[in-house]
Image (cartoon, rainbow, N blue to C red; front, side):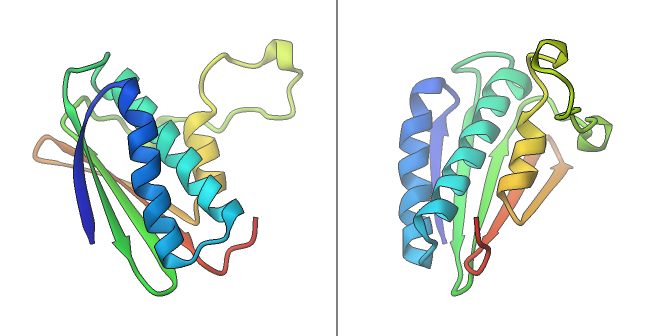
Length: 138
């Protein structure tokens, strides 16, 4: 298990990506799966900064990587605003581009890239847990 605290700003995104990339490589994820993990974490952290905190440098992002023999479990925690992911509708990806919303693909894409995506909200701490299994093929 590795845990690191990052400032909640966009400059941290590349450092967070490197942190999770190292964990993904240690688990033995292939390059495609590693990229999926990095992209999902980047989207999640961007959402924390934009939606939970409402801007940069308002709070921290705690990233924990649980390295297991067959999977990587990543936990992101923040103390920003919580939300109900069940109220977020899947986007209509069949709609023409000009009819699609500018936002709203993040949660959908995280669920596509990762094998599991779970949220919990307890005592002012938002926790996003994402799992990527080694055997998953991109």
